[in-house]
Length: 440
Ligand code: GDP
Image 1 (tube, rainbow, N blue to C red):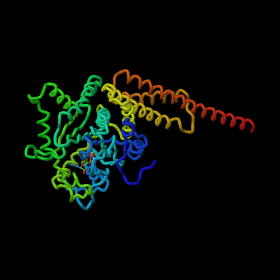
Image 2: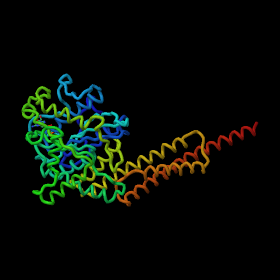
Image 3: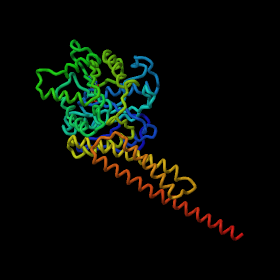
Image 4: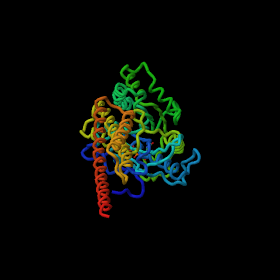
Protein backbone atom coordinates (compact mmCIF):
# COMPACT_ATOMS: atom_id res chain seq x y z
CA UNK A 1 0.00 0.00 0.00
CA UNK A 2 1.63 3.29 -1.05
CA UNK A 3 0.84 6.65 0.46
CA UNK A 4 -1.13 9.24 -1.41
CA UNK A 5 1.25 11.93 -2.61
CA UNK A 6 0.08 14.48 -0.06
CA UNK A 7 1.41 13.88 3.46
CA UNK A 8 -1.34 13.36 6.02
CA UNK A 9 -2.09 12.07 9.51
CA UNK A 10 -1.89 8.26 9.58
CA UNK A 11 -3.09 5.99 12.31
CA UNK A 12 -0.25 3.96 13.83
CA UNK A 13 -2.06 2.70 16.90
CA UNK A 14 -5.66 1.77 16.64
CA UNK A 15 -8.26 1.57 19.35
CA UNK A 16 -11.30 1.35 17.18
CA UNK A 17 -11.84 -2.38 16.77
CA UNK A 18 -13.50 -3.55 19.95
CA UNK A 19 -11.37 -1.08 21.88
CA UNK A 20 -8.35 -3.35 21.49
CA UNK A 21 -4.98 -1.72 21.05
CA UNK A 22 -3.28 -2.70 17.83
CA UNK A 23 -0.30 -1.34 15.94
CA UNK A 24 -0.81 -0.70 12.25
CA UNK A 25 2.26 -2.46 10.93
CA UNK A 26 1.89 -1.30 7.32
CA UNK A 27 1.87 2.35 8.29
CA UNK A 28 4.66 1.90 10.85
CA UNK A 29 6.78 0.25 8.18
CA UNK A 30 6.11 2.95 5.59
CA UNK A 31 6.79 5.85 7.92
CA UNK A 32 9.58 4.57 10.17
CA UNK A 33 11.43 2.20 7.83
CA UNK A 34 11.58 4.63 4.94
CA UNK A 35 15.21 4.35 3.75
CA UNK A 36 15.64 8.14 3.54
CA UNK A 37 15.02 8.59 7.29
CA UNK A 38 15.30 5.26 9.09
CA UNK A 39 18.91 5.53 10.31
CA UNK A 40 18.70 9.07 11.63
CA UNK A 41 18.39 10.06 15.29
CA UNK A 42 14.87 11.19 16.00
CA UNK A 43 13.01 13.88 17.93
CA UNK A 44 9.49 12.67 18.72
CA UNK A 45 6.99 15.39 19.59
CA UNK A 46 3.71 14.04 20.92
CA UNK A 47 0.63 16.02 21.77
CA UNK A 48 -1.66 14.27 24.17
CA UNK A 49 -4.69 15.10 26.24
CA UNK A 50 -8.44 15.02 26.53
CA UNK A 51 -10.46 14.58 23.42
CA UNK A 52 -11.68 17.68 21.50
CA UNK A 53 -9.50 20.27 23.12
CA UNK A 54 -7.75 21.49 20.02
CA UNK A 55 -4.83 19.04 19.73
CA UNK A 56 -5.25 18.40 16.02
CA UNK A 57 -5.83 22.08 15.38
CA UNK A 58 -2.51 22.90 17.04
CA UNK A 59 -0.64 20.17 15.19
CA UNK A 60 -1.58 21.90 11.97
CA UNK A 61 0.49 24.87 13.15
CA UNK A 62 3.37 22.51 13.91
CA UNK A 63 3.17 21.01 10.42
CA UNK A 64 3.06 24.44 8.84
CA UNK A 65 6.15 25.54 10.77
CA UNK A 66 8.07 22.37 9.86
CA UNK A 67 7.17 22.68 6.20
CA UNK A 68 8.05 26.36 5.95
CA UNK A 69 11.23 26.08 8.01
CA UNK A 70 12.82 22.80 6.98
CA UNK A 71 11.34 22.03 3.57
CA UNK A 72 10.66 25.36 1.91
CA UNK A 73 13.28 27.17 4.04
CA UNK A 74 11.04 30.23 4.10
CA UNK A 75 11.23 31.20 7.77
CA UNK A 76 13.74 33.95 8.30
CA UNK A 77 12.24 35.85 11.22
CA UNK A 78 10.09 35.32 14.29
CA UNK A 79 7.04 36.19 12.19
CA UNK A 80 6.25 32.97 10.39
CA UNK A 81 2.44 32.93 10.43
CA UNK A 82 1.46 34.79 7.29
CA UNK A 83 -1.86 34.74 5.45
CA UNK A 84 -0.01 34.42 2.12
CA UNK A 85 0.96 30.83 3.07
CA UNK A 86 -2.73 29.84 3.00
CA UNK A 87 -5.19 28.43 5.53
CA UNK A 88 -4.19 26.34 8.51
CA UNK A 89 -4.87 22.79 7.41
CA UNK A 90 -3.50 19.33 7.90
CA UNK A 91 -4.89 16.72 10.25
CA UNK A 92 -8.47 17.45 9.13
CA UNK A 93 -9.92 18.85 12.30
CA UNK A 94 -13.61 19.44 12.37
CA UNK A 95 -16.22 21.16 14.49
CA UNK A 96 -18.96 19.28 16.32
CA UNK A 97 -18.88 16.51 18.88
CA UNK A 98 -17.86 13.44 16.88
CA UNK A 99 -14.37 12.18 17.50
CA UNK A 100 -11.81 11.79 14.80
CA UNK A 101 -8.55 10.84 16.43
CA UNK A 102 -8.70 7.37 17.91
CA UNK A 103 -5.44 5.93 19.17
CA UNK A 104 -2.21 7.53 17.97
CA UNK A 105 -1.71 9.29 14.65
CA UNK A 106 1.61 10.15 13.06
CA UNK A 107 2.21 12.88 10.51
CA UNK A 108 3.33 10.81 7.52
CA UNK A 109 6.06 13.24 6.50
CA UNK A 110 9.22 13.12 8.59
CA UNK A 111 11.18 16.37 8.43
CA UNK A 112 14.96 16.39 8.45
CA UNK A 113 17.22 19.12 9.73
CA UNK A 114 20.44 19.58 11.66
CA UNK A 115 20.97 20.21 15.34
CA UNK A 116 23.24 23.14 16.22
CA UNK A 117 26.02 20.52 16.57
CA UNK A 118 25.64 19.73 12.86
CA UNK A 119 24.20 16.26 13.52
CA UNK A 120 21.20 15.37 11.38
CA UNK A 121 17.88 14.80 13.10
CA UNK A 122 14.48 13.58 11.97
CA UNK A 123 11.32 15.10 13.45
CA UNK A 124 8.25 12.95 14.05
CA UNK A 125 4.89 14.41 15.11
CA UNK A 126 2.30 12.39 17.00
CA UNK A 127 -1.30 13.21 17.85
CA UNK A 128 -2.70 11.01 20.61
CA UNK A 129 -6.29 10.46 21.61
CA UNK A 130 -5.37 10.00 25.19
CA UNK A 131 -8.02 10.59 27.79
CA UNK A 132 -11.58 10.06 28.65
CA UNK A 133 -14.33 10.47 26.11
CA UNK A 134 -17.55 8.55 25.84
CA UNK A 135 -16.19 5.73 23.70
CA UNK A 136 -12.90 4.99 25.32
CA UNK A 137 -12.38 3.12 28.53
CA UNK A 138 -10.06 4.41 31.19
CA UNK A 139 -7.66 1.50 30.65
CA UNK A 140 -7.28 2.22 26.95
CA UNK A 141 -6.67 5.89 27.61
CA UNK A 142 -3.98 5.11 30.12
CA UNK A 143 -2.37 2.77 27.57
CA UNK A 144 -2.33 5.45 24.86
CA UNK A 145 -0.93 7.98 27.30
CA UNK A 146 1.70 5.51 28.46
CA UNK A 147 2.82 4.52 24.97
CA UNK A 148 3.07 8.09 23.75
CA UNK A 149 5.10 9.08 26.83
CA UNK A 150 7.43 6.11 26.41
CA UNK A 151 8.20 6.87 22.76
CA UNK A 152 8.40 10.67 22.77
CA UNK A 153 11.21 13.07 23.63
CA UNK A 154 8.77 15.97 23.99
CA UNK A 155 5.39 15.20 25.49
CA UNK A 156 2.89 18.05 25.28
CA UNK A 157 0.05 17.60 27.71
CA UNK A 158 -2.81 19.62 26.19
CA UNK A 159 -5.19 20.79 28.91
CA UNK A 160 -8.16 23.12 29.13
CA UNK A 161 -8.00 26.15 31.42
CA UNK A 162 -5.99 24.57 34.26
CA UNK A 163 -3.73 21.79 35.54
CA UNK A 164 -5.93 19.55 37.68
CA UNK A 165 -5.00 16.92 40.22
CA UNK A 166 -6.36 14.27 37.87
CA UNK A 167 -3.89 15.43 35.21
CA UNK A 168 -1.06 15.00 37.66
CA UNK A 169 -2.34 11.54 38.54
CA UNK A 170 -1.97 10.51 34.91
CA UNK A 171 1.65 11.42 35.01
CA UNK A 172 2.33 9.95 38.38
CA UNK A 173 1.46 6.49 37.15
CA UNK A 174 4.95 6.50 35.60
CA UNK A 175 6.83 7.15 38.79
CA UNK A 176 7.27 3.44 39.47
CA UNK A 177 8.90 3.13 36.07
CA UNK A 178 11.41 5.82 37.03
CA UNK A 179 12.19 4.09 40.31
CA UNK A 180 12.78 0.78 38.57
CA UNK A 181 15.11 2.45 36.14
CA UNK A 182 17.01 3.92 39.06
CA UNK A 183 17.32 0.57 40.83
CA UNK A 184 18.32 -1.55 37.86
CA UNK A 185 20.20 0.67 35.46
CA UNK A 186 23.52 1.20 37.18
CA UNK A 187 24.49 3.72 34.52
CA UNK A 188 21.22 5.51 34.92
CA UNK A 189 21.71 8.98 36.26
CA UNK A 190 18.96 11.00 34.66
CA UNK A 191 15.18 11.22 34.65
CA UNK A 192 13.61 8.46 32.54
CA UNK A 193 11.72 10.87 30.30
CA UNK A 194 12.85 14.07 28.65
CA UNK A 195 10.73 17.18 28.10
CA UNK A 196 7.20 17.67 29.35
CA UNK A 197 5.11 20.67 28.41
CA UNK A 198 1.83 21.55 30.03
CA UNK A 199 -0.04 23.47 27.35
CA UNK A 200 -3.05 25.21 28.82
CA UNK A 201 -5.69 26.16 26.23
CA UNK A 202 -8.23 28.96 26.74
CA UNK A 203 -6.28 30.23 29.76
CA UNK A 204 -8.87 32.33 31.58
CA UNK A 205 -6.80 34.05 34.32
CA UNK A 206 -4.52 36.41 32.45
CA UNK A 207 -4.75 38.87 35.32
CA UNK A 208 -3.04 36.27 37.52
CA UNK A 209 -0.46 34.80 35.13
CA UNK A 210 0.14 36.25 31.68
CA UNK A 211 -0.14 34.23 28.44
CA UNK A 212 2.92 32.51 27.04
CA UNK A 213 5.77 30.63 28.67
CA UNK A 214 6.72 33.11 31.39
CA UNK A 215 3.18 33.11 32.79
CA UNK A 216 3.20 29.35 32.29
CA UNK A 217 6.36 28.98 34.35
CA UNK A 218 4.76 30.98 37.16
CA UNK A 219 1.66 28.77 37.07
CA UNK A 220 3.86 25.68 37.08
CA UNK A 221 5.83 26.95 40.06
CA UNK A 222 2.61 27.57 41.94
CA UNK A 223 1.33 24.08 41.11
CA UNK A 224 4.47 22.17 41.91
CA UNK A 225 5.62 24.13 44.94
CA UNK A 226 4.80 22.36 48.17
CA UNK A 227 1.67 23.73 49.74
CA UNK A 228 0.51 23.17 53.24
CA UNK A 229 -3.11 22.71 52.13
CA UNK A 230 -2.22 19.56 50.22
CA UNK A 231 -2.01 16.19 51.88
CA UNK A 232 1.45 14.72 52.12
CA UNK A 233 0.34 12.07 49.61
CA UNK A 234 -0.28 14.75 46.98
CA UNK A 235 3.02 16.37 47.71
CA UNK A 236 4.77 13.04 47.20
CA UNK A 237 2.86 12.67 43.93
CA UNK A 238 4.14 16.02 42.70
CA UNK A 239 7.70 15.23 43.76
CA UNK A 240 7.51 11.95 41.87
CA UNK A 241 6.42 13.72 38.69
CA UNK A 242 9.26 16.20 38.97
CA UNK A 243 11.74 13.30 39.05
CA UNK A 244 10.28 11.70 35.93
CA UNK A 245 11.14 14.37 33.37
CA UNK A 246 14.43 16.10 32.69
CA UNK A 247 12.63 19.39 32.00
CA UNK A 248 9.09 20.53 32.69
CA UNK A 249 7.66 23.65 31.07
CA UNK A 250 4.28 25.29 30.74
CA UNK A 251 2.67 27.64 28.22
CA UNK A 252 -0.65 29.46 28.59
CA UNK A 253 -2.57 30.04 25.35
CA UNK A 254 -5.45 32.47 24.89
CA UNK A 255 -8.86 31.43 23.53
CA UNK A 256 -8.68 31.25 19.69
CA UNK A 257 -11.99 33.10 19.22
CA UNK A 258 -15.57 32.06 18.70
CA UNK A 259 -15.20 31.26 15.01
CA UNK A 260 -12.58 28.58 15.72
CA UNK A 261 -14.41 27.25 18.75
CA UNK A 262 -17.93 27.20 17.42
CA UNK A 263 -18.41 27.94 13.75
CA UNK A 264 -19.01 24.88 11.58
CA UNK A 265 -17.95 26.95 8.57
CA UNK A 266 -14.48 27.72 9.98
CA UNK A 267 -12.07 26.88 7.19
CA UNK A 268 -8.72 27.55 8.82
CA UNK A 269 -8.33 31.15 7.63
CA UNK A 270 -5.80 33.01 9.78
CA UNK A 271 -8.00 36.11 9.79
CA UNK A 272 -10.74 34.09 11.55
CA UNK A 273 -8.42 33.24 14.45
CA UNK A 274 -7.96 35.57 17.42
CA UNK A 275 -4.80 37.65 17.00
CA UNK A 276 -3.58 37.05 20.54
CA UNK A 277 -3.87 33.29 19.99
CA UNK A 278 -1.86 33.54 16.78
CA UNK A 279 0.81 35.66 18.47
CA UNK A 280 1.32 33.12 21.25
CA UNK A 281 1.23 30.12 18.91
CA UNK A 282 3.83 31.89 16.77
CA UNK A 283 6.06 32.11 19.85
CA UNK A 284 5.27 28.67 21.25
CA UNK A 285 5.85 26.43 18.21
CA UNK A 286 9.55 27.37 17.73
CA UNK A 287 10.12 26.64 21.43
CA UNK A 288 9.52 23.01 20.50
CA UNK A 289 10.60 22.83 16.87
CA UNK A 290 13.36 25.34 16.16
CA UNK A 291 16.77 23.72 15.61
CA UNK A 292 18.20 24.80 18.95
CA UNK A 293 15.19 23.41 20.84
CA UNK A 294 14.89 19.98 19.20
CA UNK A 295 15.39 17.11 21.64
CA UNK A 296 16.72 13.79 20.29
CA UNK A 297 14.84 10.88 21.83
CA UNK A 298 17.03 8.89 24.20
CA UNK A 299 16.46 5.83 26.36
CA UNK A 300 18.87 5.50 29.25
CA UNK A 301 20.96 8.21 27.59
CA UNK A 302 21.22 6.24 24.32
CA UNK A 303 19.87 8.00 21.21
CA UNK A 304 17.34 5.99 19.27
CA UNK A 305 16.86 5.99 15.49
CA UNK A 306 13.68 6.47 13.47
CA UNK A 307 13.59 2.73 12.65
CA UNK A 308 13.75 1.86 16.36
CA UNK A 309 10.28 3.39 16.75
CA UNK A 310 8.99 0.55 14.57
CA UNK A 311 10.25 -2.00 17.11
CA UNK A 312 9.26 -0.05 20.23
CA UNK A 313 5.71 0.71 19.13
CA UNK A 314 4.97 -2.85 18.09
CA UNK A 315 6.35 -4.28 21.28
CA UNK A 316 4.48 -1.84 23.52
CA UNK A 317 1.24 -2.57 21.65
CA UNK A 318 1.79 -6.30 22.20
CA UNK A 319 2.24 -5.72 25.92
CA UNK A 320 -0.86 -3.53 26.12
CA UNK A 321 -3.06 -5.56 23.82
CA UNK A 322 -4.39 -7.83 26.56
CA UNK A 323 -6.89 -5.10 27.36
CA UNK A 324 -5.20 -4.13 30.64
CA UNK A 325 -2.50 -1.64 31.36
CA UNK A 326 0.44 -3.87 32.18
CA UNK A 327 2.07 -3.32 35.54
CA UNK A 328 4.97 -0.87 35.49
CA UNK A 329 7.67 -3.54 35.77
CA UNK A 330 6.21 -5.07 32.62
CA UNK A 331 6.32 -1.76 30.77
CA UNK A 332 9.87 -1.26 31.95
CA UNK A 333 10.83 -4.73 30.77
CA UNK A 334 9.10 -4.08 27.42
CA UNK A 335 11.38 -1.08 26.94
CA UNK A 336 14.43 -3.12 27.91
CA UNK A 337 13.39 -5.92 25.57
CA UNK A 338 12.90 -3.55 22.63
CA UNK A 339 16.29 -1.94 23.28
CA UNK A 340 17.93 -5.38 23.48
CA UNK A 341 16.27 -6.58 20.26
CA UNK A 342 17.50 -3.47 18.45
CA UNK A 343 21.02 -3.93 19.86
CA UNK A 344 21.09 -7.59 18.72
CA UNK A 345 19.95 -6.62 15.20
CA UNK A 346 22.45 -3.78 14.95
CA UNK A 347 25.40 -5.79 16.27
CA UNK A 348 24.48 -8.73 14.01
CA UNK A 349 24.37 -6.39 10.99
CA UNK A 350 27.75 -4.97 11.97
CA UNK A 351 29.30 -8.47 12.05
CA UNK A 352 27.68 -9.38 8.73
CA UNK A 353 28.87 -6.25 6.96
CA UNK A 354 32.47 -6.76 8.11
CA UNK A 355 32.50 -10.51 7.33
CA UNK A 356 30.84 -10.04 3.91
CA UNK A 357 33.71 -7.78 2.93
CA UNK A 358 36.21 -10.45 3.90
CA UNK A 359 34.44 -13.59 2.71
CA UNK A 360 32.42 -12.49 -0.32
CA UNK A 361 35.48 -12.00 -2.52
CA UNK A 362 36.66 -14.31 -5.27
CA UNK A 363 39.44 -16.15 -3.47
CA UNK A 364 38.92 -18.51 -0.55
CA UNK A 365 40.68 -18.09 2.79
CA UNK A 366 42.71 -20.51 4.87
CA UNK A 367 40.46 -21.98 7.56
CA UNK A 368 42.47 -20.57 10.45
CA UNK A 369 42.53 -17.09 8.81
CA UNK A 370 38.76 -17.20 8.39
CA UNK A 371 38.38 -18.27 12.01
CA UNK A 372 40.58 -15.40 13.15
CA UNK A 373 38.44 -12.90 11.23
CA UNK A 374 35.31 -14.41 12.75
CA UNK A 375 36.67 -14.11 16.29
CA UNK A 376 37.73 -10.52 15.72
CA UNK A 377 34.42 -9.43 14.16
CA UNK A 378 32.45 -11.35 16.77
CA UNK A 379 34.37 -9.50 19.48
CA UNK A 380 33.61 -6.14 17.77
CA UNK A 381 29.91 -6.99 17.57
CA UNK A 382 29.79 -8.13 21.21
CA UNK A 383 31.61 -4.94 22.30
CA UNK A 384 29.06 -2.88 20.39
CA UNK A 385 26.27 -4.73 22.20
CA UNK A 386 27.93 -4.46 25.63
CA UNK A 387 28.60 -0.73 25.24
CA UNK A 388 24.93 0.14 24.75
CA UNK A 389 23.26 1.74 27.71
CA UNK A 390 20.37 -0.66 27.95
CA UNK A 391 17.71 -0.86 30.63
CA UNK A 392 16.85 -4.17 32.25
CA UNK A 393 18.21 -6.63 34.77
CA UNK A 394 21.18 -8.96 34.41
CA UNK A 395 19.08 -11.98 33.42
CA UNK A 396 17.38 -10.39 30.42
CA UNK A 397 20.65 -8.88 29.24
CA UNK A 398 22.35 -12.27 29.54
CA UNK A 399 19.52 -13.89 27.56
CA UNK A 400 19.94 -11.47 24.63
CA UNK A 401 23.73 -11.68 24.77
CA UNK A 402 23.47 -15.45 24.37
CA UNK A 403 21.02 -14.93 21.52
CA UNK A 404 23.48 -12.62 19.75
CA UNK A 405 26.40 -15.03 20.25
CA UNK A 406 24.27 -17.85 18.83
CA UNK A 407 23.32 -15.75 15.79
CA UNK A 408 26.95 -14.82 15.07
CA UNK A 409 28.13 -18.43 15.40
CA UNK A 410 25.30 -19.53 13.13
CA UNK A 411 26.34 -16.97 10.53
CA UNK A 412 29.93 -18.16 10.82
CA UNK A 413 28.86 -21.71 9.95
CA UNK A 414 27.39 -20.28 6.74
CA UNK A 415 30.59 -18.31 5.96
CA UNK A 416 32.64 -21.46 6.56
CA UNK A 417 30.40 -23.37 4.17
CA UNK A 418 30.77 -20.68 1.49
CA UNK A 419 34.53 -20.65 1.96
CA UNK A 420 34.64 -24.44 1.69
CA UNK A 421 32.72 -24.32 -1.60
CA UNK A 422 35.27 -21.84 -2.92
CA UNK A 423 38.19 -23.94 -1.65
CA UNK A 424 36.78 -27.00 -3.41
CA UNK A 425 36.28 -25.09 -6.63
CA UNK A 426 39.83 -23.75 -6.45
CA UNK A 427 41.13 -27.30 -5.83
CA UNK A 428 39.17 -28.56 -8.80
CA UNK A 429 40.56 -25.82 -11.07
CA UNK A 430 44.10 -26.45 -9.81
CA UNK A 431 43.64 -30.20 -10.42
CA UNK A 432 42.35 -29.61 -13.94
CA UNK A 433 45.13 -27.23 -14.68
CA UNK A 434 47.69 -29.71 -13.39
CA UNK A 435 46.11 -32.51 -15.46
CA UNK A 436 46.19 -30.26 -18.50
CA UNK A 437 49.85 -29.40 -17.96
CA UNK A 438 50.77 -33.09 -17.39
CA UNK A 439 48.94 -34.00 -20.55
CA UNK A 440 50.93 -31.44 -22.49
P1 GDP B 1 -8.79 17.27 19.35
O1 GDP B 1 -9.88 16.27 19.45
O2 GDP B 1 -8.15 17.57 20.67
O3 GDP B 1 -7.78 16.94 18.29
O4 GDP B 1 -9.49 18.66 18.98
P2 GDP B 1 -9.60 19.43 17.58
O5 GDP B 1 -8.30 20.03 17.20
O6 GDP B 1 -10.26 18.56 16.60
O7 GDP B 1 -10.56 20.63 18.00
C1 GDP B 1 -11.87 20.42 18.47
C2 GDP B 1 -12.69 21.68 18.30
O8 GDP B 1 -12.16 22.73 19.09
C3 GDP B 1 -12.74 22.22 16.88
O9 GDP B 1 -14.00 22.79 16.69
C4 GDP B 1 -11.66 23.30 16.88
O10 GDP B 1 -11.90 24.30 15.90
C5 GDP B 1 -11.82 23.87 18.28
N1 GDP B 1 -10.58 24.40 18.85
C6 GDP B 1 -9.32 24.25 18.38
N2 GDP B 1 -8.46 24.86 19.20
C7 GDP B 1 -9.17 25.41 20.21
C8 GDP B 1 -8.82 26.18 21.38
O11 GDP B 1 -7.65 26.49 21.66
N3 GDP B 1 -9.88 26.57 22.18
C9 GDP B 1 -11.18 26.26 21.90
N4 GDP B 1 -12.12 26.70 22.74
N5 GDP B 1 -11.52 25.54 20.82
C10 GDP B 1 -10.54 25.11 19.98
